[in-house]
Image 1 (cartoon, one colour):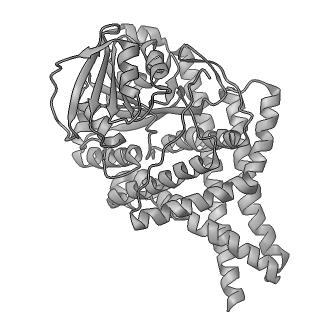
Image 2 (cartoon, one colour):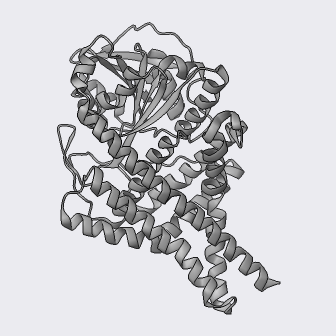
Length: 465
């Protein structure tokens, strides 16, 4: 019986690894052809002419900040230099315990401002609203701590423009990014939300709030995340969007139509995955209203963010992400296998539930089972080779495919040395890093079940350091 149980677990894990790796390899190809098609359209599009017309849409950029004294000024200076006809920046200091608000006052010459706004979404108390005397389009909200979702909701209430864009305080965005990410709203009335690509800024050369040169970090942990971001954040999301099944827009860089965001109820303050939960709920609300709509993902607009450089900090982040995934799915479970939501309900939602959310159970027990299978000599070499092929070899193929398509489309890493290093990283991440990640996600699933919410803090460094 013990032998049969081990072999059953082995084969279930093998099927799981085949499904997840083959699915993302297919999504890579869908994303690749979608990106090439969009690049051809981009070459024909006169972006400046589009936004010089009367049809451009002004937007409010919301930057939630909690203990971001190291990066907040660089971030704001970067946004102020963006190429866009008309925008305002709303920084929301969410009860920081460091010198974030003091640094904002000092660097941007803030004065108290009596700005009228409607409280469409309930939030924690706003203590003060400031306006910069140096930059007329910069507004700072100082409020009681309520979490990132609550800070974003406060920004939405104060926002004066029809589009709202959320950007993390530890991020920088390219100068043309706003023009690119808003373009779908100008040319397609159905678009209610759009997301951009998140890339890793660690070790990049930054001057005056701009990424001047893309460098590859010398730290192995950061390199592993570079491959991971290419695979999941870039090609994975472009692939889902190509199948009209996008369920997540990164909280680091997304744009929404304000009226639809408010109708959906704003950001959920009871989850650590407020970005994904909002997109799922927006899908539900828009579908229920009967209005035609689109939620799109664009790979060209780039947001650069700092990622953890220490294993402990990264572990906390991944546990939190997985917990947020589970909360988002459960809050919107009525989409599960619901044909009314098309491929989102019939394909993407079940995939995220069975493969992404519950996957760590199969991964962790699968690794344990195959080790015991080898130790006790059960099932022969065939099952072991099948397991290694499905979990390791297909994983390596997926990562190398993502890297190859990156080189064929955007080519952010131009040095041959960097490409060789990333190729070796794509192989090595499957031999330890992914297994550790499985354990973190497994713990995140446990925290979801026990309702143990712990945010944890990431250590920030000045970008120019």
